[in-house]
Image (cartoon, one colour):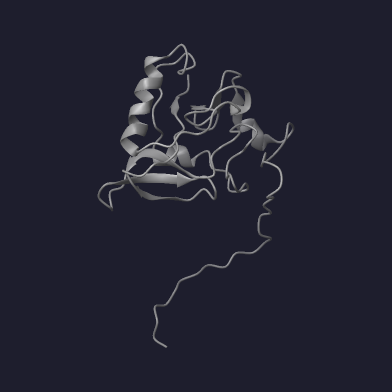
Length: 175
């Protein structure tokens, strides 16, 4: 037939193994792959590669290993506004900082670990990450009334309707 031709690329080597058992904690204490992150012991994680500081838990979570609460979904505008509420409580919710914000598409994508799945993030540093999409601060330039979201089931990004609800993880410039 004269259907639409598809382009493809072949690669050699074994496919990466993905375990669906225990939380994915790629690397280990002696593996440089995990040396990328520093657990600051206060509910924040510093990424030495990007120099960004992340909230360890999603919005709505707190406590050791993010075990208290559940991830809170919000519309895009509410997610953008959530940072103002956290920054207004720098001593509490802000963990000593008042410059938290919603990450842009590239920043949120930087913590995706494609060797992990469901969630596609290193669970040693980002425990209880929601198996759902998280908002970024990046509006879509292609589709009106959409912003980029990143799904931590598989790490893929796509535009999402800004009136829909997604989860939120905040970031700040590390220093």
